[in-house]
Length: 238
Image (cartoon, rainbow, N blue to C red; front, side, top):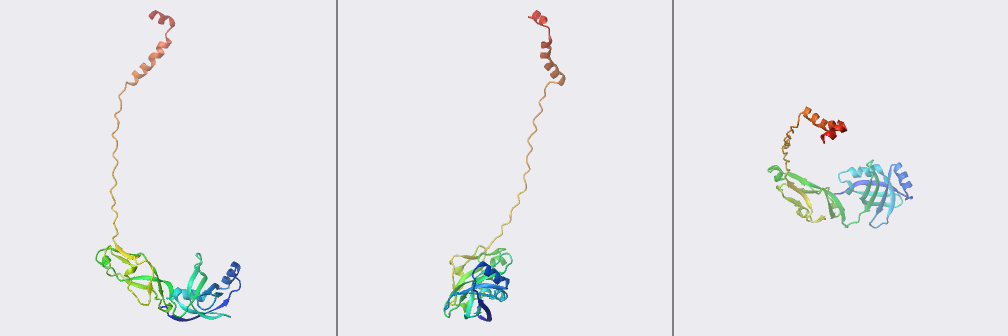
């Protein structure tokens, strides 16, 4: 559960709201943050990056409950509501905190863990595939679990586990469509590699047997001889 840890992060009010002020804040090793909800108004502040990063790396991560003490405003019990991470450096660059109110339930996302080895994997050579890895829930902040654990040991080949199969818990309301698939066990089909079919060679066409070279040359020369005869000889013949 996300019990309140003995963590207090001290912050100061952020006067400027522009990009230049945000860059200056980050150069000082701090992160621009916004606090809202509960009984107080919205507060823009800046908090130490090192301390916020340590909270996010803890077991409860973004669901950790801690005290944010802003100079001139006072302490508030808060949780991370949203955060922005630099995609290149992987560093926190902005955070939104939600004030907690006693008795008020909130919606959060927690990891979804599969427990056990499915019978379809153990005895039927199947493969377990997890479709959902996080799930949204609604509960009191102090009842937030580190994860939702679901037993998959009874899943056989072709069996499917849905959100509706998660055991009921009076303190936690599981959100999302009941028919959404969490995990399934299937077979891995082996690809059948067919032997390449050899291309049949087309039968060679028979060579045409023509006249001999000498005969061809003589036949081609006949018209030339006719052209070379004197006109008189042609006349006699006629």
